[in-house]
Length: 504
Image (cartoon, rainbow, N blue to C red; front, side):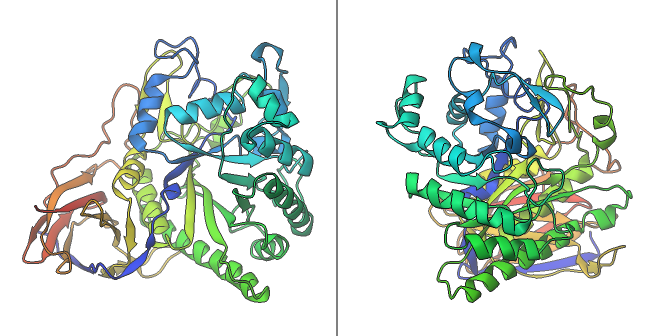
């Protein structure tokens, strides 16, 4: 038995918020093999009549991805959306300066919208505020969302799409605070442009929701000032400010690596504070919510990416092969997002296929699941409902950069309609199991129906591949329910999903 003991109290009335399903979103950029060779590979044995890989479609459906951000990313800041519509044979090839590749434009807005419909996902469409601006942004909204009887809506209809897409969520550019960005701007320059673009985009379609660019990551020298200035300009016109953050275990210190979700938690709290400051300054009534529209582990592929031949088509860029410890951190990050479900309404795991992704494909070969596929799938499938605020007591440890890191990282989701309660939990302890006792007296009649565990005793660096998935979950966890409580021993270094349902 475990020497470490943790307790949790769950009450139906201790609610953080109803979870916006868009928190389980993802991201497809015209980058590497995300589009070409990822979702689209016409010559593949599994390709449908559109050239879409059906094996990839099935895996995306398994994840139940509700929202996909598109087409970038850094790519969007140099993208002319008009290049990707109309007859494919007459589309131009362009140099993509963001990733130093050649873009064929075989896939564009209509093809991607068709793919998104096949996987039951909405699209979070980004507009180019790097090389383009207000005019191109309003025209794209008109092309996508206006019913007909205007130049761009009729152009869409002439391209074979009669009904408007009614795209709800739009990003006002991408990472405009970054010097690497095409059309990089100061906060004041971007804030003014985003304000004016937002204004006219909503004149075209008043029903849309808009995401203003926050900082590219919290270590940017302009962080906080950037958010405050941008929101000062855009507060009346946008619903969201974006956050981006990637982590890596470059120092190979697992205890410190698994604590990085505490930094993510602090980042979220900081941005909420800034948004609320602007609300107070404006004497505003609405709260600006958060779109954490890029988050993941990203560091494995950095060296390989330096060797890619410039101006090639869909080279293997940013192809991190994730190991077991990465899956644990991704689980911690997902729990962190759920803890802030009252303000984080959109989040996008970056990205979805091949590029820092849960799904990988071989050219003309199989698709396979990375280690991070599983915590993402479990939260997306079982984490719909109300995010609860559990009262947790856990033993703690200190690491290189953090103090008082709880061994237990956990939260819970209650779905009243389906009468289910799901506990998500990571045991960060390197050597010992964690004895967990959960008080669920308020959930009368609820019983454990499954305890899913992702563990890998002895090899933190174990990866999956097209040849096999040694890192995969099992349902042999020992959680049991009795006397108004749940007890379980969470194995050392493990991701756990304890599913309860009301007995009939």
